[in-house]
Length: 191
Ligand SMILES: [Ca+2]
Ligand SMILES: [Ca+2]
Image 1: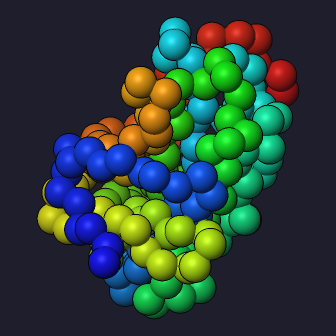
Image 2 (image 1 turned 45 degrees about the vertical axis):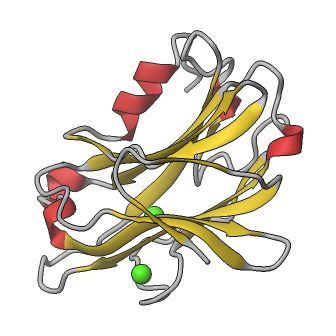
């Protein structure tokens, strides 16, 4: 039986291999496609990614430790009205020892240019699926929590006393993906 998480709610994961699925449906009539992008930041105890490659997104689909795999960009959210639009597969047994937290962020591509925000997206959620049986373990639906935001940290996996837990963090930002990269990466950016 899946748990419907509320914003801020924390659960024990109790799984090693899972898929973190993100879904949304665009509202009609905004004149542009609605391209939400799921990304993951694997951060260490300094709350930074150790190297750029620990930032997993459509342009870098595998983390260096092979713990995370992004299955690819969906540019419209229209892949499925019901199911996940973008998925990040997670194998917690492979996570580099340095990593203490994995943040899942969803940004709206070209939000400013297209004058888009979360108020124009419907049915957005993050969910965790047990890869061994395809069962949904937990789901957090954003509902009416966000409107003018263009990015949301949906949830985070974090290690506490050697156990992985998940929090439905639900933190909204009026920022783009570049903001998160500069927030969590202080090294030299390779262009
Ligand atoms: Ca996308
Ligand atoms: Ca969809």
